[in-house]
Image (cartoon, rainbow, N blue to C red; front, side):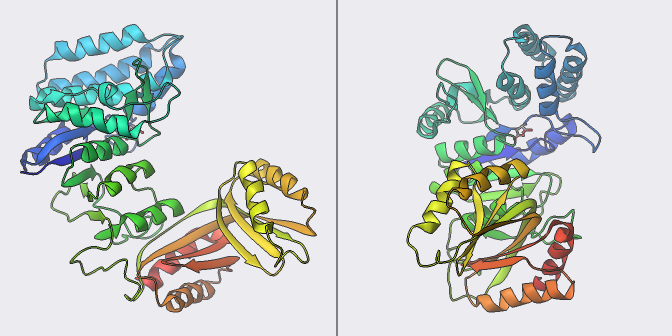
Amino acid sequence: MGVRAVKFGGTSLASASQIRKCMDIVQAHPDRKYVIASAPGKRSADDEKITDLLYQLYEQRSGDYAHTWSKICLRFTEIAEDLGVDASKVDSALGEIDSHLGPDTSVDYCASRGEYLNAMIIAAHLGWSFIDAAEVVRFSDSGEFLAEETNDLLGEALRTHDHAVIPGFYGATPSGEIKTFSRGGSDVTGALVARATQASVYENWTDVSGILTADPRIVDNPLPIPRISYTALRQLTYLGASVLHENAIYPVRRANIPTHIRNTNQPQDPGTWIQGEPFAGSSLADASPATPQKMIGLAGRTNCLALTVRKVQWSGSLGVGAQLLNLFDEARIAVDLVVTSVDSWTFIFRGDTSTKESVMAKIGSLDPDSMEVRENLALVGVVTTGTLPRAKTTSAINQSLAEAGIDVFLDSSAESMHVVAVDSLRYEDAVRSIYSVLT
Ligand code: ASP
């Protein structure tokens, strides 16, 4: 029998009725042995996420936090009661947390309690072991996540439990100080559990039926992506798609474990498979350059800047590119795109006026002939299968933008990615017109 690591997101676990759906899913397959739980999310659009309330609680910890705390307690006692979980257990866990609240409480301790309590309740409901992530997800004293130590600790702990529920999002230092991943970090814990248990699949259950080909807030009913490689997913995420937490890719990718994104509310939907490449036996021979290019998905982001630097005789002088990029490094700016022409370099990056000023001051030391900044740019990128023929995809993108009257400030295409920079005001129009021409 195999093992599946099964992570449920906040909306999937937002209430007792949602938790019941998840538990039906868990019980529908014997391989679903390890459950990774998020904190309860929103039950409706105007509801509050428990983690957001916990961050508020942290802000109020030295003063009057009673109102926020009572909202948090009520959510958990309601869930526990509805699931038939022993109320005294939940009350004592809540009492213990309350006794820790005060000026010295850390933000990570507060934020992590939603996952802690939810996982504890779910474990009690299922009659499974609860494994506190503080015991098995390790951070160094300086707060750096320790992947190998965690893998050993998790593997060791889970070997002794046939079934367990593990809270997502946090871990602890050797001295027991709680540390969290960044927001959305339960995805990371799920991937760590999958790796440590050598799972056959990492199931990530959420509130959408997989990864969509475009942002549904911009494009009407975008198609879901049935299969995507970890590489292409990384490209889409980097371009701005919010799918999985970035750090949830590495542990499973390196262990060659596929991730399956599925919808708790529509478990019959096929969802999205994320795999290493090439997909053996799949119709999408993703890594093969010989396959025609076909759009996998598109994503983008606004608030980008372009800085063009020029100096006569720069082209052909060795070391100029490295010097310029070093100055961006010194200004702590990650460059998203670089395009060069004769004696000119254009860098696209994210930032505001102060980012712009700090890098311009640094580049000024190279005494360029001119520096020009273009603000309010958006990047839109298309990730495709295969790598050739590129010209067809590029011309379809550019033609669709021309027809929509959208000026392209710059375009770049390499390997299986095509990126255009347009005015931020036309961002959504650009996404829609590219989507319509490539689907
Ligand atoms: N509850 C945490 C958050 O809201 C972590 C997670 O849900 O993955 O960011």
